Length: 113
Image 1 (cartoon, rainbow, N blue to C red):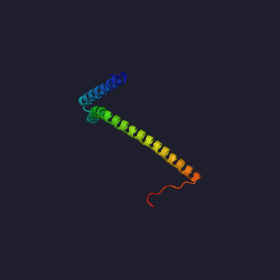
Image 2: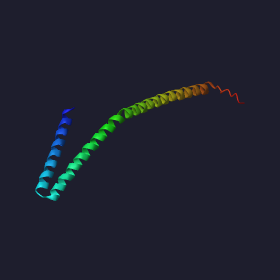
Image 3: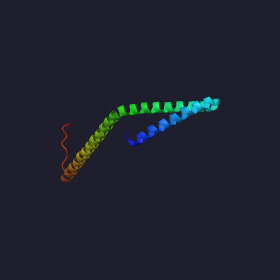
Image 4: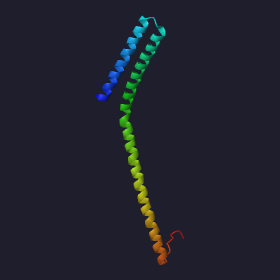
C-alpha cells in the first residue's frame, strides 16, 4: 500500500469517526436536524467508499483488455502506414515506367484489341 493511499484511509476513518461521534452527540443533546446532518454525511461517506471500491475493482479488470485493444489498434495503424508506403512506391514505379515509355515512343501492347 502506498503512502498516499494510507493517508486517504486515515482521512476516511477520521471522517467517519467524527460524523458518527457527531451523530451520537447531537442525538444525545436532542438536536434532530444536527443529528440528521451527521447521519447524511455518514451515509454519503459510506456510499462514496463503496463506489470507490467498486470503481477500482472494475477498472483493474478492464485495464488489460483496454491495453490489448490499444495494442491491436497501434499494430493495425502501423500495418496501414506500411501498406500506404508500399502503394506509393508502386505508384511511383508505375509513373516512372510510363514516363520512360513515352520518352522512347513505345505504345503499350493491348491484348484486348
